[in-house]
Amino acid sequence: MVTLYGITSCDTVKKARRWLEERGITYRFHDLRKDGLDATLLGAWERALGWEALLNRRGATWRKLSEAQRCGLDRDRAVALMLAHPTLVKRPVLDLGGSIRVGFRQDEYEQVFR
Image 1 (cartoon, rainbow, N blue to C red):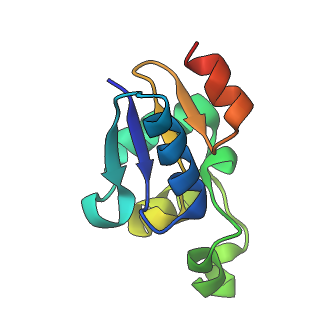
Image 2: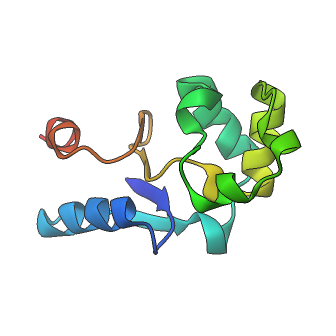
Protein backbone atom coordinates (compact mmCIF):
# COMPACT_ATOMS: atom_id res chain seq x y z
CA MET A 1 0.00 0.00 0.00
CA VAL A 2 1.28 3.43 -0.96
CA THR A 3 1.12 6.02 1.82
CA LEU A 4 1.67 9.73 1.34
CA TYR A 5 2.65 11.70 4.44
CA GLY A 6 2.27 15.45 4.59
CA ILE A 7 -0.06 18.24 5.60
CA THR A 8 -3.15 19.25 3.68
CA SER A 9 -2.17 22.92 3.36
CA CYS A 10 1.25 22.23 1.77
CA ASP A 11 1.35 23.15 -1.92
CA THR A 12 3.87 20.42 -2.74
CA VAL A 13 1.68 17.81 -1.04
CA LYS A 14 -1.30 19.10 -3.03
CA LYS A 15 0.67 18.65 -6.27
CA ALA A 16 1.68 15.11 -5.32
CA ARG A 17 -1.87 14.16 -4.35
CA ARG A 18 -3.26 15.62 -7.57
CA TRP A 19 -0.63 13.74 -9.61
CA LEU A 20 -1.50 10.43 -7.92
CA GLU A 21 -5.25 10.96 -8.27
CA GLU A 22 -5.05 11.98 -11.95
CA ARG A 23 -3.32 8.67 -12.67
CA GLY A 24 -5.74 6.59 -10.61
CA ILE A 25 -3.06 5.53 -8.14
CA THR A 26 -4.59 4.35 -4.88
CA TYR A 27 -2.88 5.71 -1.79
CA ARG A 28 -3.54 6.46 1.84
CA PHE A 29 -2.95 10.01 3.08
CA HIS A 30 -1.51 10.54 6.56
CA ASP A 31 -1.71 14.12 7.80
CA LEU A 32 1.35 14.75 9.95
CA ARG A 33 -0.31 17.67 11.69
CA LYS A 34 -3.56 15.86 12.54
CA ASP A 35 -2.44 12.22 12.74
CA GLY A 36 1.00 12.85 14.23
CA LEU A 37 4.30 11.09 13.74
CA ASP A 38 5.66 8.28 15.88
CA ALA A 39 9.29 7.61 16.73
CA THR A 40 9.37 4.20 15.03
CA LEU A 41 8.25 5.57 11.69
CA LEU A 42 10.53 8.61 11.85
CA GLY A 43 13.42 6.34 12.87
CA ALA A 44 12.88 4.17 9.79
CA TRP A 45 12.84 7.24 7.55
CA GLU A 46 15.95 8.62 9.19
CA ARG A 47 17.85 5.34 8.76
CA ALA A 48 16.83 5.19 5.09
CA LEU A 49 17.47 8.84 4.18
CA GLY A 50 19.38 10.57 6.98
CA TRP A 51 18.04 13.35 9.16
CA GLU A 52 19.42 16.10 6.91
CA ALA A 53 17.23 14.94 4.01
CA LEU A 54 14.13 14.91 6.22
CA LEU A 55 14.48 18.22 8.06
CA ASN A 56 12.58 21.08 6.44
CA ARG A 57 14.58 24.24 7.08
CA ARG A 58 12.44 26.39 4.76
CA GLY A 59 9.05 26.28 6.44
CA ALA A 60 7.26 28.44 8.96
CA THR A 61 7.80 25.92 11.76
CA TRP A 62 11.59 26.14 11.32
CA ARG A 63 11.50 29.95 11.35
CA LYS A 64 9.46 29.92 14.57
CA LEU A 65 12.08 27.86 16.43
CA SER A 66 14.46 29.71 18.69
CA GLU A 67 18.04 30.26 17.60
CA ALA A 68 19.15 27.85 20.33
CA GLN A 69 16.91 25.12 18.90
CA ARG A 70 18.21 25.63 15.36
CA CYS A 71 21.93 25.87 16.12
CA GLY A 72 24.30 22.94 16.48
CA LEU A 73 21.87 20.29 15.33
CA ASP A 74 22.92 16.69 15.35
CA ARG A 75 20.91 13.56 14.56
CA ASP A 76 19.39 13.15 18.03
CA ARG A 77 18.35 16.79 18.40
CA ALA A 78 16.95 16.94 14.85
CA VAL A 79 14.90 13.77 15.35
CA ALA A 80 13.60 15.09 18.68
CA LEU A 81 12.56 18.36 17.01
CA MET A 82 10.77 16.53 14.19
CA LEU A 83 8.90 14.38 16.71
CA ALA A 84 7.89 17.45 18.71
CA HIS A 85 7.00 19.39 15.53
CA PRO A 86 6.01 16.95 12.75
CA THR A 87 5.66 19.83 10.28
CA LEU A 88 9.46 20.07 10.34
CA VAL A 89 9.55 16.97 8.14
CA LYS A 90 10.05 17.77 4.45
CA ARG A 91 6.96 16.98 2.48
CA PRO A 92 5.59 14.90 1.06
CA VAL A 93 7.07 11.62 2.22
CA LEU A 94 6.06 8.82 -0.11
CA ASP A 95 6.18 5.34 1.42
CA LEU A 96 6.05 2.65 -1.21
CA GLY A 97 6.18 -0.20 1.30
CA GLY A 98 9.90 -0.77 1.13
CA SER A 99 11.14 2.43 -0.49
CA ILE A 100 10.87 5.99 0.80
CA ARG A 101 10.95 9.21 -1.25
CA VAL A 102 10.90 12.79 0.04
CA GLY A 103 9.52 15.71 -1.92
CA PHE A 104 7.61 15.72 -5.16
CA ARG A 105 9.31 15.67 -8.51
CA GLN A 106 7.04 14.60 -11.34
CA ASP A 107 9.82 12.81 -13.26
CA GLU A 108 10.73 10.77 -10.19
CA TYR A 109 7.09 9.81 -9.55
CA GLU A 110 6.73 8.80 -13.20
CA GLN A 111 9.69 6.43 -12.83
CA VAL A 112 8.45 5.00 -9.53
CA PHE A 113 4.94 4.29 -10.83
CA ARG A 114 5.78 2.77 -14.23
